[in-house]
Amino acid sequence: MMVETKPNDDPAHDGLTKAVRERHARWESWRSEGEPSMMRFVGQIGVLGWIIVTPTLVGLFAGRWIDRWLGTGIFWSAPLLFVGVAIGFWSAWRWMHQQ
Image (cartoon, rainbow, N blue to C red):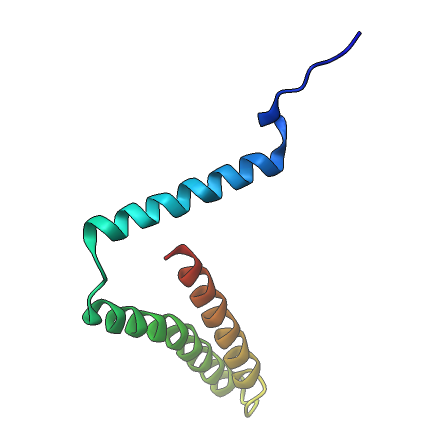
C-alpha cells in the first residue's frame, strides 16, 4: 500500500512560503507608504539608546544603594552594572528584531 504525500507537507516549503509572503507584504507596504522620514530614523535611534541606558542606570543605582546599605564598597555596583548592560543590549536586540 503506497502513501501519497502532498508537496505542501514539507516544513521547509512552509518556511519558504512564509518568508516570501512576508517579503511581498513589506514590499507592498513600502510601495504604498514610501520611504520612512529622517525623523523616524532619529526617533528609532533615540528609543534604542534609552532601551540600553535605562536598565544600565537602574543596575548601577541598585548596586550603589545595596553597597551603601551593606558598606561593601563596589561589591554589588559592578556586577549589577554589568547585569543592567546585558539586559539593555538583550532588550535592544529583541526590539530591533521586532521592528
